[in-house]
Amino acid sequence: MLAHGGAQTQIEQTVAALKHNGVEADFVRWWDGGQQADLIHFWGRMPADHIKLAQQKGIKVVIGELLTAQGSRTPGQLRLQKFISRSVQRFAPGSFAAAFNWDSYRLADAVIAMTPWEKHLMNYMFGAALEKIFIVPNGVEEVFLTTPKTGRGQWLVCTATITPRKRVLELAQAAVHAQTPLWIIGRAYAESDPYARQFYALARQHPQLICTDSPPMADRAGLAKIYRAARGFVLLSAMETRSLAAEEAAACECPLLLSDLPWARSTFESSATYCTLTKSVDATAAALRKFYDAAPNLPLPPKPPAWNEIGRQLKTIYERVLNAAG
Image (cartoon, rainbow, N blue to C red; front, side):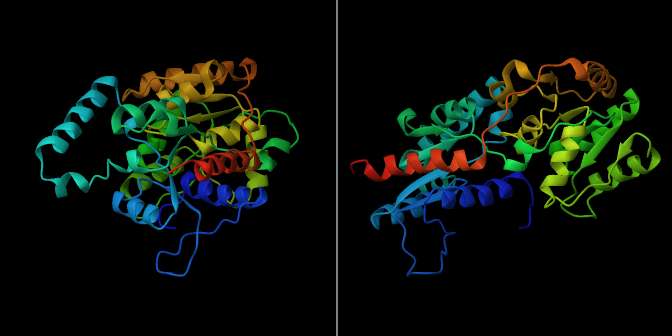
């Protein structure tokens, strides 16, 4: 509610897909002592004490945390983080270490990863048993899979919240430098945000190159038409788990230019173009121009599954968890 974006869409679409597959799904009412459940699917890192309480009541627990920061770190940074976390667990007071809820991964009955890279991290960083980790990607709404083909236009499209992590301002600066028309679809968390104000000021200075006229995010058919007509989709975020916007664009057969991060490589492999993260506007502009020129002849990314298929996959996992001994 307070931080709109892909995670909100993921949760809402998953619940709808579960219902479509015959699962009686509802949002947890933590204040309601009379609510019954066989299983809780928690988006995020459910507190370890909550997992224990649920299991004491005979409720199985599935967690699925988006490892946005960890998934974008270098191997050296990950080794350092693991060393620090192990040191805290070994030498710090138990109450201090417990606040991080690292045990949640070992306590949960199942863990959902978005990519093979996340599965590795959940095991390597947090000790989740490999046999308990299931890879379930995002789905996309049917409209992105069924919108008719159309001629490609001249605009690159980026759908992202206007925030430093998504590097929308840096992308816009590179687009101006490279003279590649760029359409930004998204909004800031708050209009008073200094980063967003910088972006909008740049867009006002270059209206022929930077477009900010966005359809309402609820207009999914309108967004699908934009992807169908775009020259390419660009997302150069500094951190990402698995971009739902990129998969929606892929469903519309839109060429992709993405930050060279593990999530992107493990999701799209050789069917996307990758850009090294850099503070150099010149370097980013060169990569953007190269992608712009090549886009009409680039291979198309594979189409992702529809949300109803994701609901079917999760239902299978739920059944396996509920039927497991213990």
